[in-house]
Image 1 (cartoon, rainbow, N blue to C red):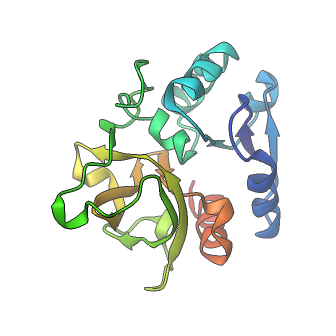
Image 2 (image 1 turned 180 degrees about the vertical axis):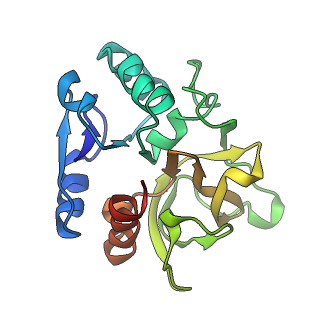
Length: 206
């Protein structure tokens, strides 16, 4: 069963519903025993980095999820701010990230050519596969996903970057290393493209 970690942040109902649409069993829970029984985990997130990280710590779930991910190697998928929490930290806040990816979350910084672009980056954008991986299998060239973010992830190790998106700068929009994965966009808001990604996570990731 896939468990969406409920630490008080994220679009939990829509994530669970999207998994149900692709035939996968998923629940949202903050119960430690339910989370410990998960075959796979989703780490959601919306809003500011520090607020999300603070709530995650307040639930007492950080060591529980950390044990499952780092020691038991349970597959985990971070969504939007959930991915950002997996980095070393964010220019948006002061708190340390989980450090599961050697990556930083940074502000959009545009050159003069792209100074007209608005922040937050909000709406649909293309996502281009950089490296083949079960999470991004069977994507077509029209694959587009829904973004809402003012900060973006920059990986220090490019072999962790599965896909990229261009919005004035190159966004590392899908990361994956071992059992740890994440997307900068919201697959639960991305219709058939999001369904494909979540179906891949449910069926292709072991």
